[in-house]
Length: 232
Length: 232
Image 1 (cartoon, one colour):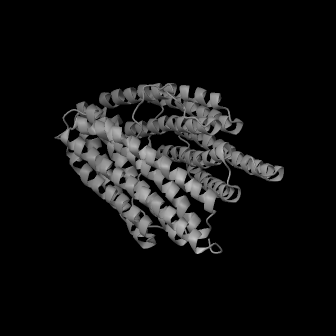
Image 2 (spheres, helix red, strand yellow):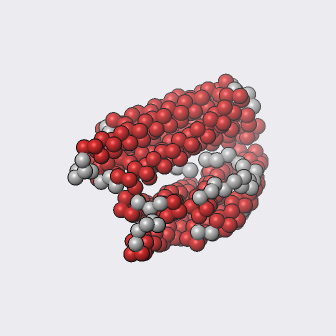
Image 3 (cartoon, chains in turn brown, red):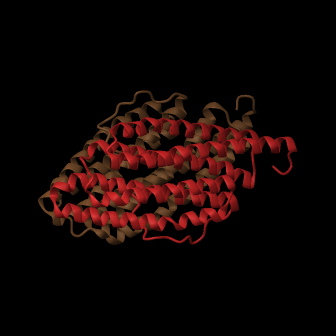
């Protein structure tokens, strides 16, 4: 945008701010959905779980809106370098946040499939794991809005904790299943739920890499990694 | 593009063809990776599994290349209506195909974690399930290249078969775990593998919806759905 006038630059910045605001709005909804999914899981709140499923449509609509605006912005203003990286990052981040919402929805869909699960020990680790993962999402989206590459790096470092939680829960659930085969059905649901939360941490890490690249034009090199449990 | 000259239209079409060719190339790699992951799983081919993991980098690079070209195309030519839908679809589809490659990679990473699994009955269903899912991927990417909305609809209809396979495998694995707690560790890996394949079918369905929208400007309404297992 270097050769265009101040008027155009201002219009571009306003458009970009609007994109950033959309991402923040999506992030708020996704974080809330994950937190709520944990509350509904622990408290066996079937109605709350259904609400999470219903509300996911809002995230889908906001993703479409973000994509529409980003594409329009590229076509109308042909931004260059850092500006273009920002717009593309916004588009990609919105799609990742939408997927984080899908994880919350998946967890919520499993709530009615679980019997009373109050006594499953691994379950007590899950909300804390989810708390760290959603905090990562929160902080990495802030880093995007602030164009703060260093804050993005700090988010990545926390994925190790989420992975550690996942591995603990995985082992605990395996033991739990072995102790009593009647627990197997329940435990597989909890296994998938733990995997969903672990994926939220991975997605926060993916976003961090996008934020870093958008802010610096460089790829986040040799980022610190945890125990690297299998994805998906 | 209606008001621009023939020269520009031709250049745009060439660029778009290049994007489509990239998508086809990515699709070929992803299909091969899924098929290979099944072969390595069944034949206990650890070297082959490692090769799948290594080769995934190619898909990552092609996704970046597709995105770069698509963004450039939007910025340089400011395409409208159907042309713009095609370019945006190419960008989104490449990201989904990259994720399909990630599923193959995840399956491959589990191969060394499994003991000799020749006798696990649910395992014999898995390659057939994967065959249907990769065929869906193959056909939906052809549908994109041909802009064939009806072919995209036919792909969606086949997701039901993949879901049915997943449900059978899930139940079989649960039974298998209950029969002998020593099977639990192995079976959880197979459970995640089955879930990964089920997700490949879901992603083919997502691509089908993108193809349909790109080709028609309409959303695929009330598409037939199967048993809708949880996404995870």
